[in-house]
Amino acid sequence: MPFDADRTTVPPGTRADPVAIGGWLLAVAAMVWAMVALGGATRLTGSGLSIMEWAPIAGTLPPLSEAEWQRLFALYKTIPQYELVNAGFGLEGFKRIFWLEWAHRLWGRLIGLAYAMPLLWFWLRGRIPPGYGMPLLGLLLLGGLQGAVGWFMVASGFEASRTTVSPYRLVIHLGLALVLFAALVWTALGLLRPGPARALPETGGLRLLVRLACGLLLLAMLAGGFVAGLRAGLDYNTFPLMAGEWVPRDYWRLAPAWTNLTENIPAVQFNHRLLATLGGLAALAAGLAAQRRLPAGFARQACLALAALAALQYLLGVLTLVHVVPVGLGTLHQANAVGLLAAGLAALHGLRAPRRAA
Image 1 (cartoon, rainbow, N blue to C red):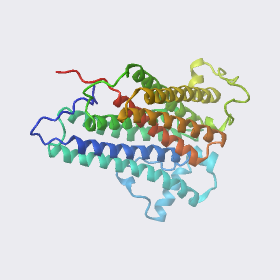
Image 2: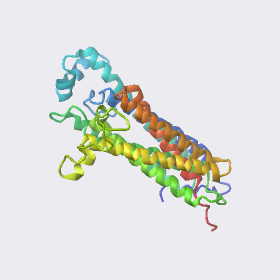
Image 3: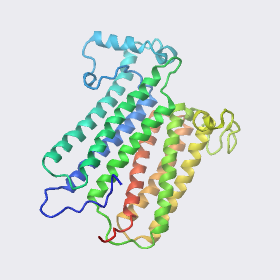
Image 4: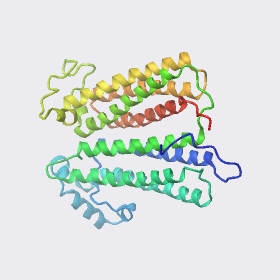
């Protein structure tokens, strides 16, 4: 397992510093969390297609002259989003959407520096614990891949007749961000909290329940990516019924049937609601079980946090829906999803079985 949290025993006399590295990884994970929230705001404001060039180095600086602003604006006016959504909003309108996308990309570059530079320092100083060198390099490559996938997603919005990015590429981009965040957090937890010496009482069933909750909630997050990509939250803005029905009548209107799961607005929104409901109920059940069965400590606190954040996420989702996806609520809903993922990872980590003796 590449991110095995039970490999943190440091041989005596080494210079390895798992606590410092774990803290650094959590700091980078917090930056990724902010990046996901910023990405949500970028999407909700329609800013993501405002920069039509992928320039990892030159794009670090914003336009510094009127001529450069005009050049970038002229590029933007060639894509369907300008013609069909923002025609005539002028250079000042372009600047408003440009700055948010530029900040989003700049933050991604800063994450890369915040990871690569300390990694190099820890490596040269011999502070990396045995067995963690390659996983940490793997995380660096994963971050670079996320940047490339981000541009792959944005480029889909330049296609003829399209005013937003491809929902499929959006879900890939979101899913990879969640994988990166999860890998950072899980690796950090393994460094900061080595495997338990003994088992907690009666955790077998609770562990399965937490796994079920995390699996359902993760699927709900990915389903939410299709809701975002199709702008499905702008329809069926009532809860709990959808156009007066529990299951929308147009659920299977597309052919082939599988496309309803990713391209049919009523089906995509219903699936997101269903997965969120099932995942939220499982998380609440896990919290109640942890309160009854577990002693005070990290595992119980993590399970209670999972339940609380799941309830908050459900409430934010309903409010976002019935208010027709305002930018503030939509961004908060996406940001809280990452916090919910962190709580699930902490709960799973706290409920691990003890290490077997060598």
